[in-house]
Length: 176
Image 1 (cartoon, rainbow, N blue to C red):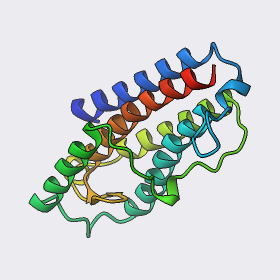
Image 2 (cartoon, rainbow, N blue to C red):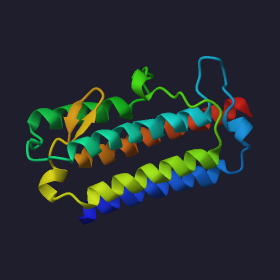
Image 3 (tube, rainbow, N blue to C red):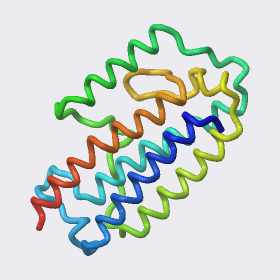
């Protein structure tokens, strides 16, 4: 694996582990408590982040079976990626696509940690098998921006995580 990809994966995993370490101080009942009926609990926010990565992993598994037809990322995709970054930079609230809306019910932090660790392990294993050409090809699909490369997938995971980490902090404050 190249250094850029390894660095991105290390950062993602470090941030994930730090979040789970911080959340260890709270009982699972509190992490599953919603601040209001229409709001997500902390567990649901984590479930949303996890589901987004699980869906990405499922798509990636399908696409890497045959990468021969994968196109390199072009100007159009780079423009779309820029728009994703701009939208996620601002704290503009928007509805998540239904496919990644949390449907986890009551769950423990340990269960979420195990699932997310497994998803990350599988994603890392796949990324380790790909060439630089494949990593720069359109092998990942964002729900709104469309097909992008795998560096953008990892960057999105980071942006997405940071956005929802703020939501987790607000939710904890509201349910304490």
